[in-house]
Image (cartoon, rainbow, N blue to C red; front, side, top):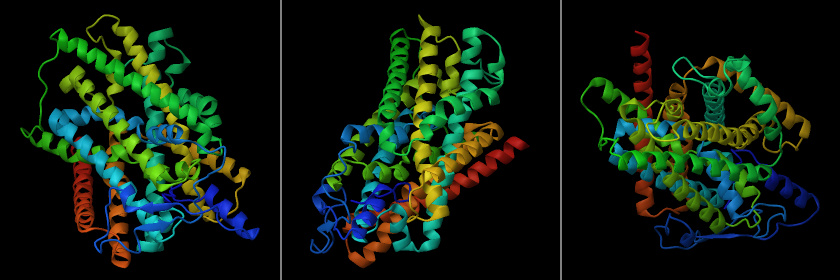
Length: 479
């Protein structure tokens, strides 16, 4: 199931294939994909040539040092649960609890279906990467556009990580930094300096690793820290509910003012961006011990369930705790008295724990960014070079650092990436690929064909509305 989306480039699979061909060898067997393994169902023609499709170069036995299902789930979940989770309580404030929860569930299911669409058609056209699928269906310009979307989306996310780390640790105009509360004022009040120190000492060594499987332990730790954040937030909210300190939350959107309606238009793309992990499916799949479609589907579904639960609990508990005062980055709300016992200790646990989580997530997302840039500049068939990889790492980290010093607000970044690159990667490209290749192979059933059309139409509409809303919002604030 070549979800070979090493964020569009090819790595271990491709190099392995070239080595085997050069030695006169064949592929290490073929894994099969059947319609029963997927959400996609059977073809309209009732089966036939596409019921089982061979995967190029994918044998059931991967390298002995490859990752298993748990490690792959941790890596994929880590690429999804990043800084974006901090914006979910604010989206709940706009959408209301009931509509917000439904949106979280629907977006999770649609994202998983789109991953399986990409997998199925990567197999159908015998492509070794997401970029090859887009190229096969839509041409070279579309493939380049997809790579650019990955670069913008991942780089924007990494910039947001650094901004949050700086704001939480050194403080901002509205909020007190963790270091100030712990040890008083000092050099760490310089946000730019603090971010640079964190980048050089903690992030750069992890980003220099060559394989994403090497990050499985840090990924597991980061997921555990995200769970700690959710558990603590939910526990605090539950205590305040029992004590009667939380009023009844709003269940639906607020249409009482033009500003509220504008917020609604802006927040929808942020919700759609919450599950964008498609650019990390490929490197994770490439390093599985058992490379089969069924295995990757299992990984995707387990990850989706985990993320839906984490997102729902985080969004609801954050909104219940802070209500209409919920910030765009809810983490900054935890510098105040929560109105319960051990409030200050719990505040430190939430903020420090999640900062460590972001530090561990950062290299996983950076891995895909580096792979995509390498593929775009040097080509997918370029031989591996450790020197080139390290050079790219240094250059990308430097640019990301500069971006974090120039962009003061994470909300703006999330709104624009969600309305543009997020929707393109997660919904528009997969739907276009499925519809285009369906004309050739007749592999989609009627239901999936309709769903693909609906997702494409909605994604385009939401993207246009989101961009217009973002521009209007910025214009209103400047006036």
